[in-house]
Picture 1 (cartoon, rainbow, N blue to C red):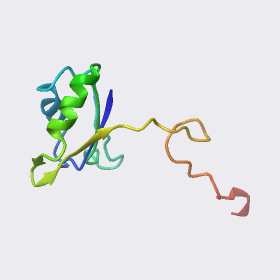
Picture 2: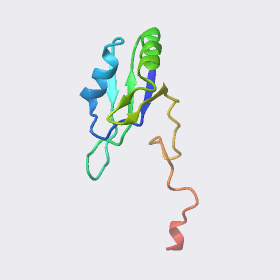
Picture 3: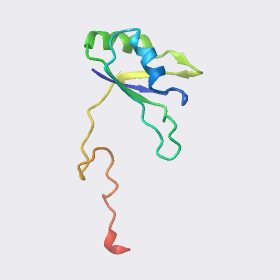
Length: 101
């Protein structure tokens, strides 16, 4: 199961997020998106846990806990939507007319 972890302190990297979840079960993958200019963590993460029961236990245990003054939010991640340009995520091209400039 893939989990979305929101409202993380900006100081939390992959190791710190793994530490939060691994005590509740096996963690197969962690992704902490970073700002493209500063390379600092953006305050959220995705955690992949192969066992759904362990993932649900981790979600219940971590959701609502406080870390560095921030209340952590954990929920099942929504499927990624495809962009029209095939890269996934937000499509900046809609409504923009390049011929006009």
